[in-house]
Every structure is written in structure tokens, then in C-alpha cells.
Picture (cartoon, rainbow, N blue to C red):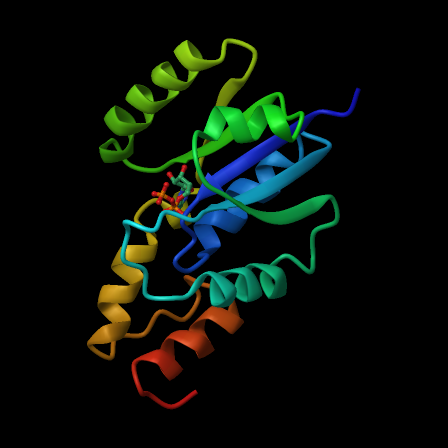
Length: 162
Ligand code: ADP
């Protein structure tokens, strides 16, 4: 049976840190489903369509990666997609507490699905979608931290030159 993982998140927008985790994840899983959580209660910079488009453009170099959207419980979505794993990335210590809590809750909800944490590459340890948005908003360069398509889209959003 092929090993499948879902990689859930907001991806608002996708960063090189996310791509690093996908690349590492593909060494363990036959297929990864990047699953964008469509949480109506959360404020996003990019629309769902824009986030999908940027992910698609950034995923061209990977085969065996699918992009999908979901709402509701992550474990229910994983079961529905016949995924054995939930892939999550770990950066600095700050990620740990939240991720630990979520992984244990998910295990309680469905013992068949395993959360797999992968350590990000050192280069991406401080890269997050929110810090990138913050820097870009005030004209800071985000070159090398996000795929080129994201760099262009963020500049457009904040009214800069592409
Ligand atoms: P969320 O809204 O769940 O925080 P994100 O899209 O920000 O979603 O992140 C999805 C997953 O990717 C999380 O497991 C997060 O820890 C991980 N991630 C985000 N940025 C990085 C990075 N720079 N390196 C490794 N993992 C990352």
C-alpha cells in the first residue's frame, strides 16, 4: 500500500520552509497531499484561489504532490484520503508546544493516523508566512525566502514593483 501523508496548513503564502518540509517528506512518503485549511474564521492575506495558484506554481518541480482544500477535523480528512500520516514541520522551540498539543489531540481522535514531524533546514528556521508578510508590508526584501511566484504576488499585494 502506498504511504500517503497530508500536509495541512494555511499556506498564506507558501514559503521555502514549507517546500523544504515537502521535499524531506517525499523521502518518507510515496505521496503528499498539501491540504489547505479553509477556516472561515481566520483572516488571510491571500484568497484561497491565490494560495492554491502559488502552491501549484511552486510544486512544479515535485511529482507525487497534490494540492487540496479541506475543513473540519484534520484526522477526518486524513482518513477520508486514506493517509497514514500527518506531516508537520518544526522550526524553533516556539512551534513545539502547539504542535505537541495538536498531535496528541489528533492521536486521541484517531489512533490510526500518525503525526510525523520533520525538522526544517537550518536556513528556514526563522521563516514563517507571517514574518514574511510583515517584512514585505513595510518594503523589506523577502528574496530567497519564498518561491519567485510568491515574491511577485506579495509585491503586487502591497503595491510595489515586481
Ligand atoms: P498553520 O496555519 O497551521 O501554522 P502554516 O501554513 O503556517 O500553517 O504551516 C504549516 C506547517 O508547516 C506547520 O507544521 C508549520 O510548522 C510548518 N512550517 C511553516 N514554516 C516552516 C518552516 N520555515 N520550516 C519548517 N516548517 C514550517
